[in-house]
Length: 149
Image 1 (cartoon, helix red, strand yellow):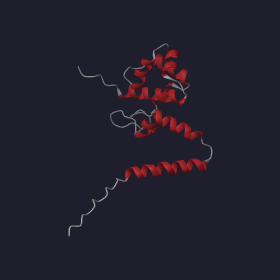
Image 2 (cartoon, rainbow, N blue to C red):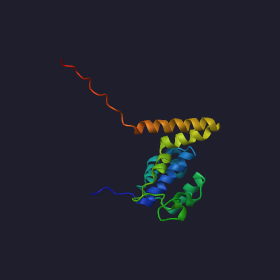
Image 3 (cartoon, rainbow, N blue to C red):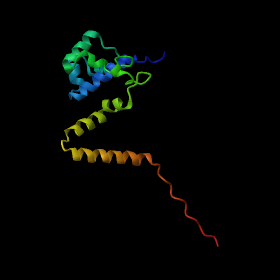
Image 4 (cartoon, rainbow, N blue to C red):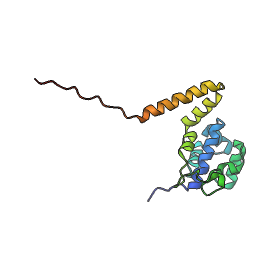
């Protein structure tokens, strides 16, 4: 029996739940407590494995402090503003996937706390430099030539 695939819209809504939960600094355990669920159920919602019902989505919106429409922003085929913001197959674009990841979110939140624009620019320059270095293939040293006379 093949493994059940998440519906792309359910997966998108789940990603948005995860993004908002992380932005407000709430754990899956805490969200589960507020909803009367286990953190495993919250995980399933966030992965899009289990569909979130209308009443539960309304409840989530209240807990996370966003309108219900927040969870549907950028759904493919949605509003003109959201056109092209989900890749074919329901995958979020790389930027959204990064920002939705734990590391991406932590990096973004920490970067936003830096007030000095010069420091922010230096960090950006550093990251660009590291990214460029990562793109240059390492050159292998040529083997030493043996002089046979």
